[in-house]
Length: 597
Image (cartoon, rainbow, N blue to C red; front, side, top):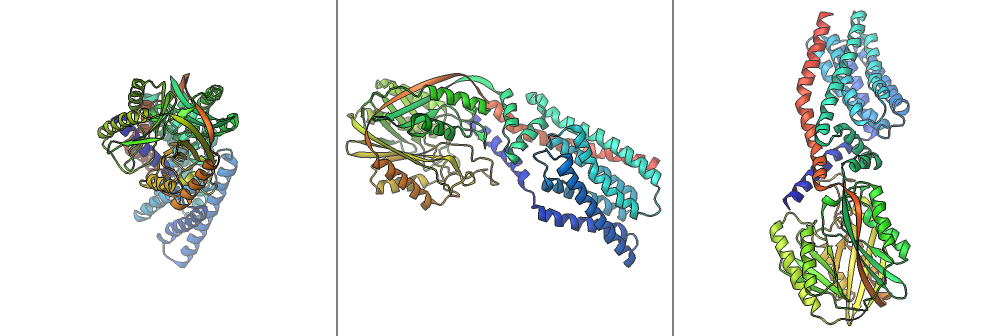
């Protein structure tokens, strides 16, 4: 439990670091800020030294010249030099230039203040060049020659207007300094980048910035292949299990798939989209309604790539033709231990069990509970116990040990009550909807809402599965109340825990649980309509369950995933510790050269 908490905190930190990369102003604002800074630089460079109307005109001319040259260089870099780079469009290239001008302006202010304008401005040129070299080499996937040209072009072109408007300067000295500055900047930035890369090489045998670039490509332009290639290298093979329940009448009616695979780690990477992918493929294969609620596991069983997803999907599809034979079922029973609630329904010789702590936080639950529940089920002669983590409330922290004990108590109580009931013929109805108005940013995955209704005797019950990462506190209870009004005796609400909604918005959590951004009334209306559709197609059915084991599936593993998340912090710490001595030594070397020459 403690390890899981640690991993969650590490992932939250990593998401916040990467999310900050989105916080750039619009191109219009960048354009205006660049114009303001360049004109400001021009005026400070001329008027401060010799205040007069003529120098004001010269300052404005210098400022507009710098702005025009900067626009040209940004366009050439983004469109021609780095034209195939998916990250560096005109907006991001201009944003880098904006930060460079802020840095350069600081040097110009100091130069004017100490009446060493030319020398200090040239030192600013060096600082800007180093910044561009480090940023481009840390973030761009282009080849080194293009990165060198992209780094050099803006500061070199921008130094030309200074040389034109400066008077009484030694051009030979300036030329020598620029050559020396370029050499020092290239060498020092390469050293700085190598220090950062070494953190990753020592930790996971992969350069830190290679991983950083891969994550950037995913966070900014949704490319998942680069980061998945690295995750594959860090993964380990493991056998994974998938449980299935199939309901059928004259033909398949509905299928419930519960993989022992966590749908993460984020966005479109690894198994984040596996619930909706399995739903789509199985509905096409069996021509029925499918849903994929969350199992009892955490991030220790994230898949690293689409290759592993396809391995799971292939095996599930190939194993889905098993015959249904169980013609009788118990009603759906709910039992509470105070803190936890268990729902159980037995079909023939297997049980379908779900667990929740709602309205308290119900996040990932350990596999320990699954082993415990299966042992309890075996005592009653049940051949299978398909267990679902309802994952249906998020409401702050909980006492993990207390929650675990409560879940076990609820499991024992619920199984005992359910197996004591008589079994009757049952009916099943199912329906699904994918609301177009709810997007990933709202917290709704592509799997939408699925409802499976069972009728045993006079009892009607519903399982509602929402493709999202948890529900806001209290929403589960609101949904259950709506279902009761339309004639359901017992129901439960599940989420898939899809991480396709994670790390795509700027928020403290990095995603919206269902109900945080989605209007509750609209959501409950969709659920009500879908449930009524499922109730309208109720028909006598049979059921069956199966467990399949898929060998040699690559999973990232909890320790590796936590190491990856912590690597972000470690690299930033190394950067903070290195940047000061790096800047001081480089600056002293350049100042010493300027004095000697």
